[in-house]
Image 1 (cartoon, helix red, strand yellow):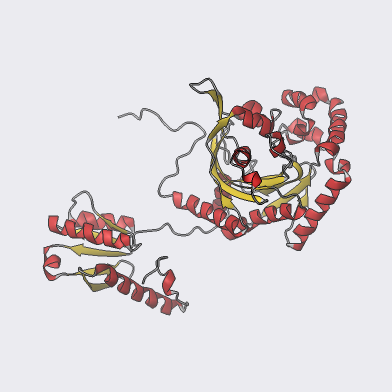
Image 2 (cartoon, rainbow, N blue to C red):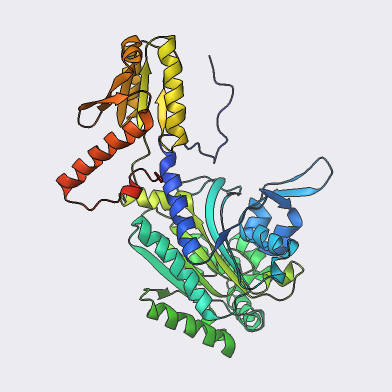
Length: 447
């Protein structure tokens, strides 16, 4: 029988055998953000196209070439979000967060959509962890944002990431820089790719981000934005560096970093890895002091970053970072006969009510087949219930790690299981010489 269709090019299934890695990365990101005062926000997967045209910028490749845009049944132009900041900024204004205490610090785990050529580390549907800090103007906020990204990488065990920072100034000082870029690249216009010739008039900073080898070679000698910063932007950047120094965060000033979205001002940064080839930027962001005003709000200095989760996982796997073992069932209940199945259902519910994971067979298989199934699941303990166990009111609880069995009362199964499993944990800890915390045994509270 032929499969009627396959996953769309540039998308990826995450199977149950792998999803624990995603969950671990996502939980680490959210926990680190929460420790810095960020609260999760969730916004729609699609927005009015105008939001991204105004927010991301209609001179960017994202808006011009990469967005999934369509007319809905009402004739409205709708776009699947290509990034997370614009939607979060829209929500900040629409829901009145701008009237609450500032800064408003939000974070999100989100799917994004861009029509790009799929390759390692680049998908058409990809996922980001992002933070946005609305209403913070001081350079200490820039440094905290960069530090938060590093904290996530450190907790995940990621190494050999290079932090590159730059300042692209404010609209006032950037106007002079644009003029200098136009003069420089105009002299070499015939050597530029067709895209860069179009960018030259509309947004010459985009030429610095071109990946065409000939354009990259020309851009090497282009004017440097740091030479055109106004006093305020220069002072801001110097203070950001001082805060990073105080945090012992190593960085390299890279005046060629401009980021791919038009809303950035002043500080921009990237964490880059050499482990995934050309798509080496794992996290990037910066300040966007004019975005909220562009979307119809009052002037609100803001900043944030986006972290590519697929790329981050590729880096972690390439570096052989440790992932926690996927959770396996605490108990598998093998039942023989209808009465035993009823008892298995009862015990499993009681176990689950107390926070344990309990699994039983739902296919009425033989005992041997059930044992094979239990082995594949990797349950910590197994128990077999048949007519004899029901008559006695007792069964044998088997520790699948040690092979040892213990008698357990079927009428007080949960408390008996807790006692036996705790004894086994104590034995392991005694052997390993570790301290023991009763409350963390299974991550639940027992009264």
